[in-house]
Length: 275
Ligand SMILES: NC(=O)c1ccc[n+]([C@@H]2O[C@H](COP(=O)([O-])OP(=O)(O)OC[C@H]3O[C@@H](n4cnc5c(N)ncnc54)[C@H](OP(=O)(O)O)[C@@H]3O)[C@@H](O)[C@H]2O)c1
Image 1: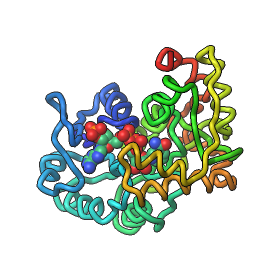
Image 2: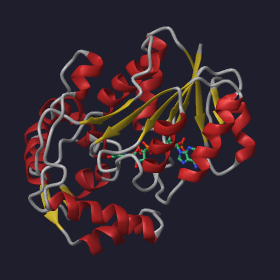
Image 3: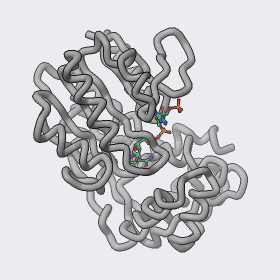
């Protein structure tokens, strides 16, 4: 069986591709910027690219575009076409704060719950890789700082490789889970804790700059995010400050049989990136 990995060049997708290959599963990588023989050109917003992604695959990992906005109706149209072409199993990457029936990926989640025969939804908390591959990489390297509007709120940051391991299990298990999983790291920590952990790993002081949600949204816009989406994402920091992410689950261990990576271990493993 071949498995389609949308977003197969991103933080989770790349790691999922590696894990599926290690498990001996055929993989088709889909990206708007394809490179290499087994990567095809695919864009959620260009329906003409969909059939080449769907044809001949047995299961699909669905990563919504990260640029913000609500892609749910497009994704549901895609899944309906995939079902008609014989794709049997769907694993969606949503987010910890998005329940079934909620906005954006929450709508796709609800569709799977109501209609799919074999499915799972990964609902990860914030990724550790936001510090090593995402928006904080430059601020750590260039200004020795991370920034947030989360105040003293706690986040159970999760390693993208643990998300990939969970997705791999959900895609390849004999029976699909037909359930959603809130995926967290082993500890809920503050951005001050993150800065301290990175400081220890790197050997120089990294500070947590506390900014307002408005300033955070402006930074997202400066990085190319549409203003509406930037406000929604920055608003999530306000929710973190109120404690909504302050919890851990045992879902990673339940799906994979191993405990999730700690932030300290992630920092040590990636220290060279921030030098
Ligand atoms: N980062 C977090 O902390 C976090 C936490 C929870 C949930 N999430 C959710 O996870 C999703 C992915 O975020 P991420 O941080 O993992 O992003 P990422 O690492 O940048 O990966 C995004 C992937 O999507 C692809 N992509 C971008 N635009 C696309 C389009 N129009 N059509 C098809 N593919 C497209 C990218 O391809 P190219 O790079 O090749 O262009 C890339 O492979 C988002 O929906 C986000 O809300 C993220």
